[in-house]
Length: 91
Image 1 (tube, one colour):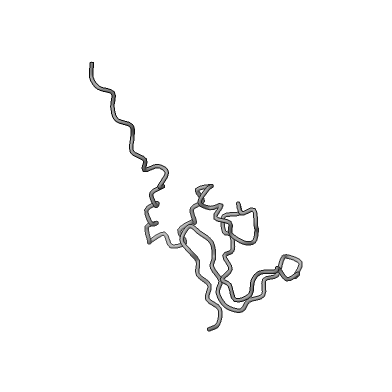
Image 2 (tube, rainbow, N blue to C red):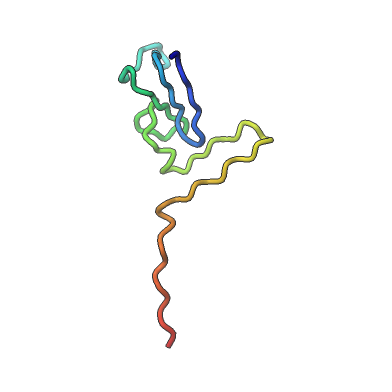
């Protein structure tokens, strides 16, 4: 299969396949072999270098690398789509 690296929009980098992860000093970083690895891009993960979905909580957005392609519209926040309470009856 080889290695597949997917740069996900406004999310982590997903790596699938046999890889070796090394820290800045060349020490191997343990992970579950055979399971895809999601690496943090936003810098807010508490499990660096792995993603913990902190990008969703902090509102991180990737910089669009190609200025000729417009960025994708933001996804709606499910928490923000609540129904407002009914209006009070007129007196």
